Image 1 (tube, rainbow, N blue to C red):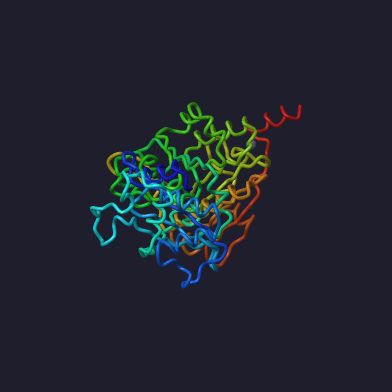
Image 2: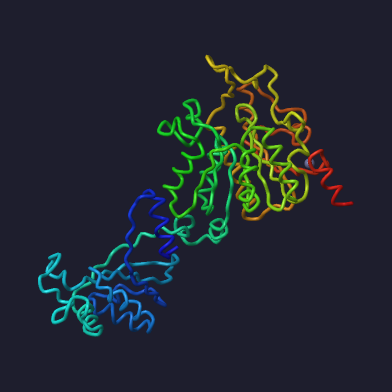
Length: 427
Ligand SMILES: [Zn+2]
């Protein structure tokens, strides 16, 4: 960041599209070694001398800034210190501001000349005279600093990535927040639904956004909070997205699908298979009460989503059984809509696990599809009236206590979605 365009984008993201933007040139001087406090420039003349010592280019940069006759020449001095790149700011005031008056009558820079016609050497002598400079703190707001304090090489990779998140409900929305905090450069959120009051207890958005489209409200929130990123939204469903925005899907580094809608996600899976699965799609969902959660990353090889999910959307392997019917969704009074109550705390484990799988997909895209499974503690599962399924116990056994995360292969079964496609290729 640093060019005019990205500065304008940053300010508009942070403060709104209509914000007028005015920028001023500043000098950036890079030192071979960090200056000792006794080397810091005291006067404008010291600053000029420092630039001269660094080299011709540094001096030219400083003089060019002064040539615009700003109220002060702002200079950033940078060097690699013990903790990485360090910056200090130095302001050399325009001599017309001496004596603390905003505008002295005699305009010292142009004394003897028409304003802005002072010969350059004389102007520089007047600017870089004996007036003291003011030191100032520099607060970096660039992506490298925000996301890794300039020390994390993964920041570059994530900043260059685009992720499309389909479904901005109680699973997709926290995953989107985690990816923004990790520094994913471009995030596109997709959801046709409006935030309602019952969503609020398990969604990053709250009362202020009730009644708004979930994707739009969350995109706006994240864009303000992370102005160096690009956060977009599409207020539509998955079928519309595939029909209208296929180029976006085809070019994105990762798609995260968290719609909880099997019909929609199986359509996405068929689209993915038809594309040849060049980049991963990560599907995420929870079981009842968020006592278990699944992330399935479909890579170029191994199973497609449908390989281990039946026609009605039931996976081969579920983790928790509810012998007393604890998985039956409760009926909401009045409107008959169904919902499943689960604690926001259990849910946080699941969404962290899915976000973790998303980071793996971005930093080291998987060749083979895999399934990451979260299981709540036995105490929690039992308290809610659940127990581990036979299938889970025979594959992974039981633990005495604590939460658990397991990675397992998601192998190809040459299912109805991917089998024909694969045999076409073989033919
Ligand atoms: Zn398949």
